[in-house]
Image (cartoon, rainbow, N blue to C red; front, side):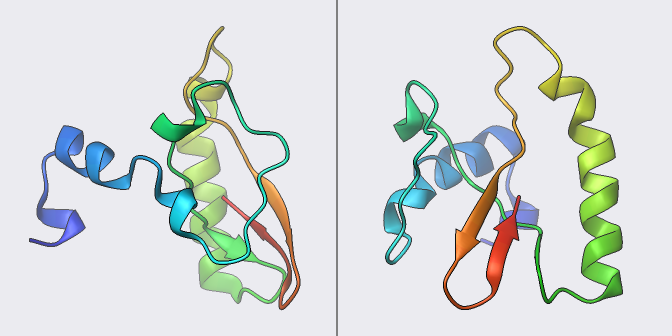
Length: 88
C-alpha cells in the first residue's frame, strides 16, 4: 500500500517517529514527545520552482494549525551538510 492510498490516521501512524531513521540527524529543538512526531521535508536550498511553489502552498494550508496553542504542526528549518538547508 502506498502512502497516498492510506487513511489519514494510518499514514500518520506510519510516519510517526520517522526522523529516528534519518542518517546523521540531530534535532536540536525537539518538541516534547518527539517520538510521536514526523518530519516531512518539502524543499531545500537547491529546490527548483515546482518544489518551492508546492512548499509555499503546503505552508499556507498548514498555517492555521501552527497558530493554535499546543499546535501539533510546526515549520522546521534544518542545516544539511550536502544541500545547505532543508525545510519542512
